[in-house]
Length: 304
View (tube, rainbow, N blue to C red):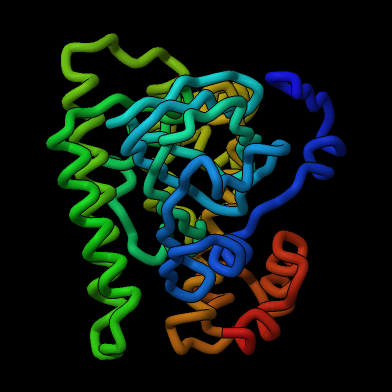
């Protein structure tokens, strides 16, 4: 099989095999999960869903390599992954294992966008990690770092398997947050004394801080551009250069994630949520939500 397959259009990307968190928990061995939001499993040379063909994962994934060696193609670029490596996959990344040693072994944590939104990780702290892994998805760390992350993973897995319902979700969210901040700390240590951010990266960082503060009330790119004293066109170009997504898409995704969280967990009515997110009417909110999710707020709320 060739080392890479070129997908030159959005249509081709749509034809890739998509792996959902729901599918991972059904098909992989040794799986622990929290609904369709969070899955922990293990991978080896015999149990690898990306070995035969490229796939995209409908969610975020963190892989901690424990043994062996693998060459993984991520968005058409090959990366060698060795023990004590952390690999981060963004939603929609094109992934294929090009080659893998017989003794390869790894831990995998896969989680949904809505789960990330639910735990409310500090955006200013997490943004450098997002930007770093966007450029280079493989991070080599120390054995001590891996041991600490693996210990947290084991605690998460233990709680996922526990029959204790009281505070179970809260404990899992706290442990997940702990693991994420460990990775943030590793990233900050690695980048200490490194190069300064470029102009586009600085703008992206400032845009994301503004988005975190104002996404509940402001959905227009022009608002954010005015705050940064630049044109909407320049802001969108800078944001896309750094993240691969336009400013408008970031805004829409932030609003939809907030809406989903409120529909699922807040107990607020749809009309209350619409006004909370600064929509003039419930009908307008419903159209916006369906346009971006393919379903209505009421149906999503019932689905729970």
